[in-house]
Image (cartoon, rainbow, N blue to C red; front, side):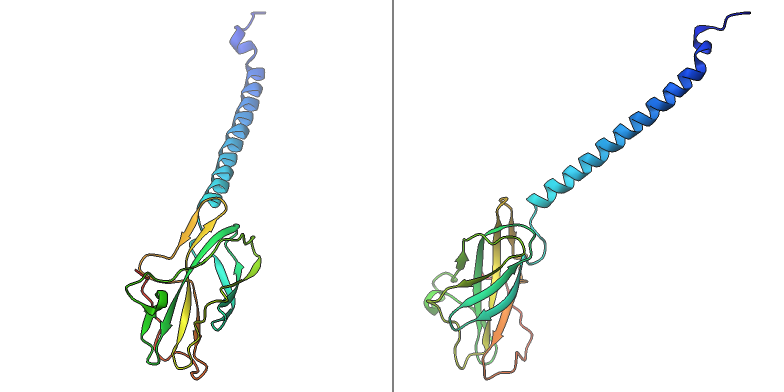
Length: 184
């Protein structure tokens, strides 16, 4: 019997071996593809700040200036900065400057204690009172947040989006829409 050439002789075995190698290389490629994607998603979520307000306001007291918030960012918060805006009786809004002096900077209310993910915390600045009997009310606005991983959340350019409102006890609410340009 004529002997088959060496390549033809092992053809069935070679075909099986090629199939096994193809399947194994496909499995390795898929693993590398998905593990890289998962790593990329994990890295991205820890280094990018949330696009929406990272906290939820639960309660606010303008008389002794305290606010209860919940960290909804999915990360540990290590710093927060708030500003306040006040409305007069006719609902003209003005950012709260130090001692009500427009020549001084806008007053920051900072907090630098860690707030764990999904934890609720009461923040207070007891030496301040933002409740004025015949005013229109006010807004307590989160302007920035710093997370433990070094990323930050900032108020979107040109507008305030993360705030809690209160109105004077003589009013039932605000008549006009509350539109606050970002403080300068």
